[in-house]
Amino acid sequence: MPEVKIKSNVMNHLTFFALIFTTLVACNANSSTKVPDKWDDVDTRSYEISDFRYIHLEGGFKVVLQQSDKPGLSIKADEDDFEYLDVEVHDEVLDIEIKDKHFTLDQIILYIHFKELETLHIEGGVKLETQGYIELKDFYVHVEGGAKIEMDIKADNFKVVGQGGVCFNLEGISKSMNALASGAAYINAENLKCERVEIKIEGVGAGFVYATNYLDASIEGVGKITYKGDPEIHKNIGGLGFIAKN
Image 1 (cartoon, rainbow, N blue to C red):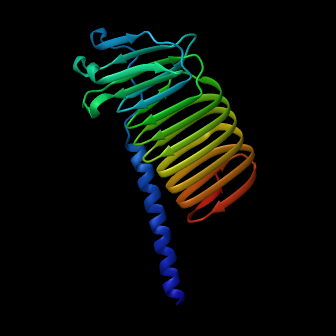
Image 2: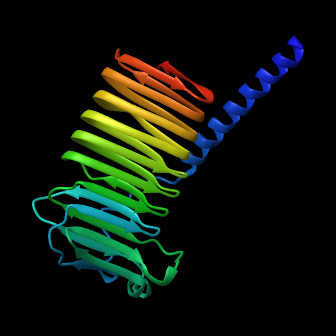
Image 3: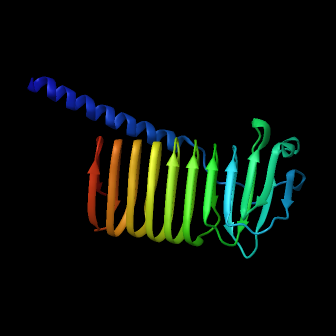
């Protein structure tokens, strides 16, 4: 019986590391979010849009998000692809979608300028970066699908939800961060310095955080959470994984 138990433990740990490794490799396999600063004006359109506080994106885009003194939107795409893009602002929501489930192999790049932002909701294979730091009060990011998000942020309260094959790389400072990774998600926030952090992993995932005062870390499934700082810690592991100081 002891030998069987040892073998079972070994298999569990091998499974754990294999799943985590697969998650990290899948995340790193995504190409860089960096996009060119200039492009051919022939394939670029600028949109006059009203002010907004919420962004909803659905489709396969590269996105550059920048804080500015006025809202703005420019899109680079193949000339034939513009007819499949649906762009509108309603009820303070900037909504950009690909119509009729048209999928193109050509790259579509969105340059979005905003004054204030409260919510960012992404569905699909988006690769997003911020241009410089964005300074916000309460900010909620909800991402579904195979996306890669790189953000430099200064916020009071920051909430992050990643569902599916989502990779977050976050830097900056926030008073608090509440993060949920479900599916096969990866959250790297070890360079996002927060006073309070709550992070939960469901399914298979990994999280890296920086908490100075308080950390509430939870795993339900297969995952790992590592942290920087010397916070008061509350841990809960309801599956296979570990929570440890980095």
